[in-house]
Image 1 (spheres, rainbow, N blue to C red):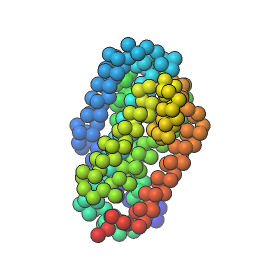
Image 2 (image 1 turned 90 degrees about the horizontal axis):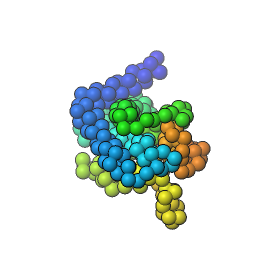
Image 3 (image 1 turned 135 degrees about the horizontal axis):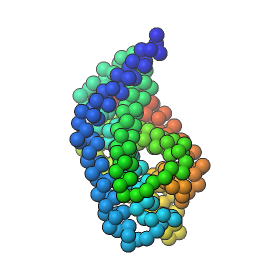
Image 4 (image 1 turned 90 degrees about the vertical axis):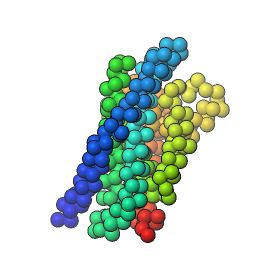
Length: 257
């Protein structure tokens, strides 16, 4: 009976998140798709022809996996941070926290909502990319695993941002000043093998580099980093972030007045 009640609580939160995404699909799904199409046209179609092959593929094909991963990262994060902070702002999260629902069920519900939007946008961008490049699946298991892990990781990151945010302005600080620079410098548009030794070393401290390269390996079979250790690192980050989120919910700091 208890397991059934927990399942009901989880599906209720998830349904709310799905309805939120689909109800305002013009704002949640269309803008990132348009943005990615512009990237395909500008970086792949116009600039790519001047750059030439990269990693054994034409430039357009090389950047497509990175752009898909960038869309998944941004939208998983954005959905979680905006939705959770809205619940915090309206104080509806307090009612959920004082209910018999376990905190890990609450966390999983919002986490699944962020993953849902990230995967929806990722699927849309993937379909659109087929008009610009011919993609192949080198390793399906790696591709699916890294998509799910990355989407979950950044959904959790969005929840953490929402917990510590004191205003709607605060939820835009991390994406603007941290997430966006890390994404652009994470090997989305280039191979780090093109960088001088010093900047290659600096790039290795960027966790997004490993996510992009593991996904690129899953699609194209090429990577600038070791796949095994990269995937192990992603799992480690995901586990640590989940436990931190759960700890913050258990403490209720910044969530209860």
